[in-house]
Image (cartoon, rainbow, N blue to C red):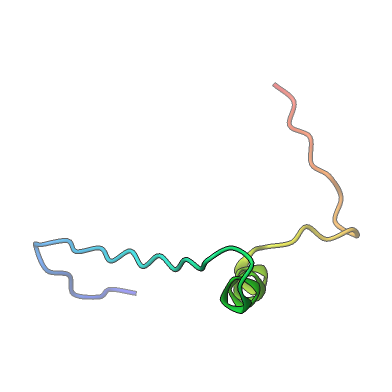
Length: 50
């Protein structure tokens, strides 16, 4: 895919926080669990030899 890029690179970083022990914290933890990759129990473990 060849997308046009400007000469100026801009990055945005958004950070969400919640007070510990609040409903907002619980909900934020649910959202992070959706985004975080979870290892599958059926996937073999890979060992790299050097």
